[in-house]
Length: 265
Image (cartoon, rainbow, N blue to C red):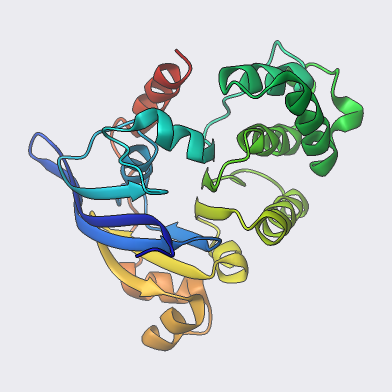
């Protein structure tokens, strides 16, 4: 559909005998804040890797801003920004240098690049720390800098994989305020994962829940709560996925680190 900026149809990803993503379909509208939720090992990270060109699908059709992430990787990569689950900044560079390096990689013209760097560092309240090495930053400051970096090239879509993991409630609240304000100001589409259900309940306009590689529910938070006759999205999530503790997806973090190395070649 013309109003969809992400379209996924019958997406499947197999690793030998393991089906990590099992024939899933969903759409994300332009300007929408979309939460992609699921237990550990449910297929979230695999799906994000496919959408962001780090992993080819086994089967299915995908369009990211009208382009195919398998055959049009450069075009797709320029359409989105991303904040990875694990830290991905260069600790030996300053905040400004991290953004400058990213801007050069994306061929943002010099005058525009300098203006955009200042604008974004002010936006995430790090302009006064622009000449400090990233290795002295707190976890929250690093996350804010990663958000600024992901937005430098004016992406239409912003992928956030567990962007507030391990942060204190005050910092988490500030980060979501930044993202929500950005969504309203620039109409940027936000696609995020989180294990903090109250975050998704508060900011997501649409939610898809994946479990064992299959999407088991879609709708806005109110619809999912009504469907499960629960009062919170966390209760709805547990009603849909069960309360059994899940193991991490085998090899997921190693693959993600490998993917980032591929990204920056």
